[in-house]
Image (cartoon, rainbow, N blue to C red; front, top):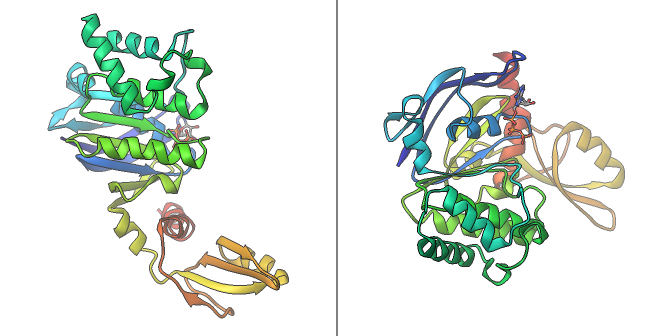
Length: 298
Ligand SMILES: Nc1ncnc2c1ncn2[C@@H]1O[C@H](COP(=O)(O)OP(=O)(O)OP(=O)(O)O)[C@@H](O)[C@H]1O
């Protein structure tokens, strides 16, 4: 499977440009689309799932233009929207059964088998008789991914699935997605949470103010901030000063002050040690020193 996004722009009716000349190549595996709130992620997802027609540009799925093959592309898709809700009082298994019939599985026996398999896959089999609107937040999100997986889609699009979940549920959700990525499918995961772009994402892109600022492997992204991540110890008084100068990423309080990690283009006036960057460092460095400047000077 592959998706090619070519020169895609979206201008809303109020003249707001939510996407500007987006180009992306997406191959099988998990693709992480990272960006702050308002970056244009949901707009891009909605175009990919054929809910929105772009103002300009084209998306090719296995070489087929999306604009001319909407029905066929739709048959490949599973989608978990950002604001996924249940609209009636159904038990968990009934909701999936209903979703399966909407997805075109006509025979009851086939449907029930598919529902049981999905319930197992997302860890909801034991609560299958509970009303869906009585599930916990994390369980609802897992039910959301289960309905997106009905009919074995080849392209799975999940929009900000981990917002508001506790760390345990977030890891659980990530594991469900990474198990899926063993198959020949494309999973596009949009998120503003750096921790969601796990090592299972073979590819990622950074979207900011409607523009793609990076596409490549998470490792290549991290490498870009090499030489720009520092650690140092500061007193309680110095803490205010340094955090006004540089984005501080972690601070661990001690008896005399803080042990901090921060990012900077270059450091003046502080004694520091360079450290190996991780994805979070790289994201903050990129947003502070690269992406926003690029935007400013264009
Ligand atoms: N129908 C619309 N009309 C006008 N502007 C819109 C519309 N939908 C979204 N926008 C604007 O487009 C920008 C991108 O929104 P979008 O929802 O795609 O971003 P996002 O990256 O998914 O952010 P979030 O995580 O906050 O949802 C935002 O500034 C938003 O206010």
